[in-house]
Image (cartoon, rainbow, N blue to C red; front, side, top):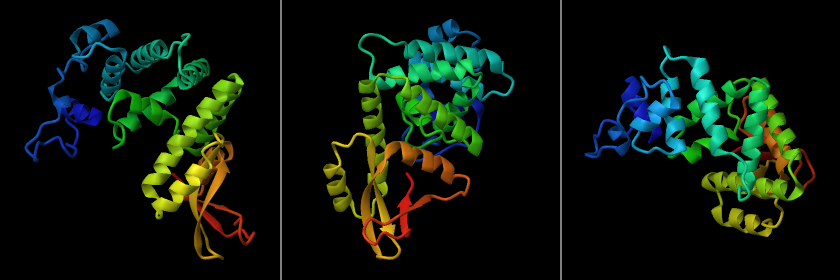
Length: 261
């Protein structure tokens, strides 16, 4: 969706769905290409089909792929728009509050440019269809550099710890559901995973994961502390592995392999 627009604007390699080979044409191609020359939020807003803040942010992200564009201007504009989108109001969701404070910290520490890197990566993720998906993508902290991953994960938990207890619970529960949704998509035994997930539904700070014990030679479904899991996932990238290791609850040996999602 979003990436199809970029393919058309910047003449990248055409992605699946761009060439209309199936007889269809993605509606994203009908967007009027004004983002390559616009220089202000007002100019983009007046020329975009959707004048909402999300579309404006998307337009600036598309423009950021142009190597001749003003990087500092784009970064400032995207930060201003994202800050407006996530302004904390009386009815703001827990994630809106978290994102607002997180973005503020990133900007104060001169690291908002790294968030834009994640936005750009997310555009080419198959699961990112609309602008709200792009914001959710950020929480994966899918940086190539391990130290950047660790730094942002620490910043995430620092921001989370500063929220009130109820808001922390809601954020952790949302992360739990997101991780379990992705685990569900790759689980070998969907029925057993669903049963384990149901039994752990009240543990907002634990994520249910599919694993296998090499010693017992059987699959297992375990609840892992969400904070520990996120840290372990970040650390695992230093070894370039897609699995975590742990102790089997049945045989009590260090023979458990946990899939990363």
